[in-house]
Amino acid sequence: MSDGGEHYFSQTPDIRSEPRDVDVLLPDISLTLTSDHGVFSYGRLDDATRIFLESAPPPPASGSLLDLGCGYGPIALTLAARSPHSDVIAIDVNERARALTAANAQRNALSNVTVCPPEAVPADIVFDAIYSNPPIRIGKRPLQALLLHWLGRLAPDGTAYFVVGKHLGSDSLAGWLTGQGFDVERVSSRNSYRTLQVRQEREVR
Ligand SMILES: C[S@@+](CC[C@H](N)C(=O)[O-])C[C@H]1O[C@@H](n2cnc3c(N)ncnc32)[C@H](O)[C@@H]1O
Image (cartoon, rainbow, N blue to C red; front, side, top):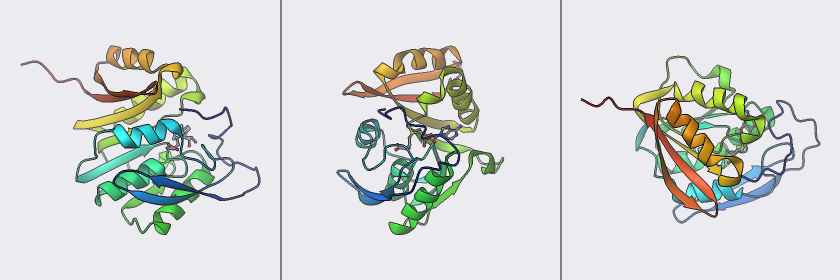
C-alpha cells in the first residue's frame, strides 16, 4: 500500500472536490472509475491494489463478498464484474469514498454492489469472501480490532484476502493472525506486496 500519509480515512473530507478518472485496466476487466481528493489514491490505481487485483485468487461465482475499506471502489467493482451473480458489499468510513463507489458502480453498470457505512451491514450476513487493501495507517491496534471484527463475519468455509506491503508489516500481521487461531497463507508476493489468505482454522479429526 502506498497511501502517502493523507487522512484518507476521515469520515467527511472537507477538501474541495476535483473528480479525476482512473482507468483500471486488468487482463480480464476494464473499468473507468472516478476518484477524488480526500479519498485514498487520488487520480491513480494504488500499486498494492493493482497487484492484488492481478494476483489474488478469483472470487466465488456467487454468495456475499465484502470489500473492507472500498475507497473509490476498485476492488469492490472488480469483484462485482468478475462475479456477476454475487452480492458485493462495499464499506468505508469515508462518506466521499462511499459516494464515489456507488456512482462508479452505476457508471460501469454493475448492479450487484451495495455501498454502506460499516455499521449498516445487516447483522445476519456472513461473507463467503472478504477482499481488502486494509487501512494500515489507522494504527496497529485499531487495525487488529477491525480485522478481527470482519473476520468474525466470515462464513465457516469463507476466505479473506488482504494485501499488505512488507514495509507496512505484512509478515508480522500474518504472524499475529496465526496467533489468533487463523490459517494464514501467503498466496502471492510481488514487488514487496504480499497477499495473505486467511481462513478459520480447521479442526484436525
Ligand atoms: C488502503 S485504503 C484502500 C481503498 C481501496 N480499496 C483501494 O484499494 O483503492 C483503505 C480504506 O479503508 C477505509 N477505512 C479506514 N478505516 C475503516 C474502517 N474502520 N472501516 C471501514 N473502512 C475503513 C479508508 O477510508 C480507506 O478508504
